[in-house]
Length: 284
Ligand SMILES: NC(=O)c1ccc[n+]([C@@H]2O[C@H](COP(=O)([O-])OP(=O)(O)OC[C@H]3O[C@@H](n4cnc5c(N)ncnc54)[C@H](OP(=O)(O)O)[C@@H]3O)[C@@H](O)[C@H]2O)c1
Image 1 (spheres, rainbow, N blue to C red):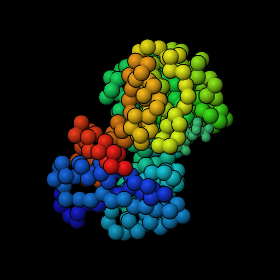
Image 2: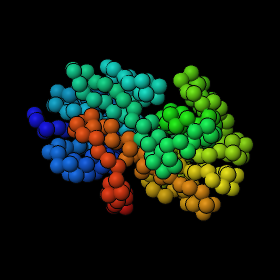
Image 3: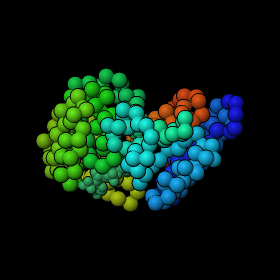
Image 4: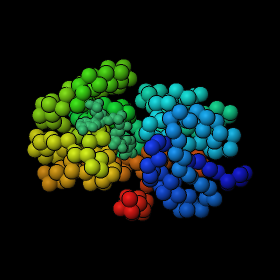
């Protein structure tokens, strides 16, 4: 690559450890690219100033994570259609004197599900989506891109689920409905897939207590929480003989378009990359 060394990073707050530097670092090394991807802990009130500084400093762009995804959406000069529908941006590319906003979480989840279940496995089938926050919004778009026929949103606060269904109904091909978590038995009976997009199940937080026996025997359970990698929900799904998909798949795949935008090469998600990230998680 000609010109100055390409550099990019990830902005988030609090400054908890992100796996992204390890992930991009793995690909940089694999492809012999003399570039860097650095952690950029950034307070919400400093986001706009920090972005200006990074552009002046010659960064190619940044990934943004919690709690900056909505603010990045508002700050982007141009948005791609997926980011516009998601209402959130996790990739800002500095180009032509402006910032282009993308949402690669949608692609990341769709690619992870397709990789494990097959491209057409969910076509015309109903899915249950747990949660109604930012990640759930991306998950609705991901499931819709895989042609499920119905997305049943279940959320602790039912009103938030209803708002999500109403917001995305105009752009989704699938039928969207919303209920509280007590709607589980009705929603799960014929579901091909359950996606947990709540933060329940993260380290030190109990997983949702759902009766997985309600699901059809050939259903799959995906938990986008990746720390711990095997959440209680996934453990119980395995015990019930269901197929499982962990959150590392989404994390790895969402990084592919970011790396391509920053470093000019489309990397591959490989078992070696997974081993690297599992090691990083185990190291804490
Ligand atoms: N694998 C990946 O690449 C990836 C990407 C993005 C996010 N994530 C993960 O996705 C999770 C959600 O992120 P987010 O940005 O969507 O967060 P968020 O906007 O804060 O939304 C949190 C969601 O979790 C629900 N929730 C939280 N605690 C709960 C509990 N104890 N019981 C039931 N529901 C609970 C909330 O329900 P209420 O609305 O009722 O409060 C809401 O639906 C996080 O764990 C994040 O790490 C993973």
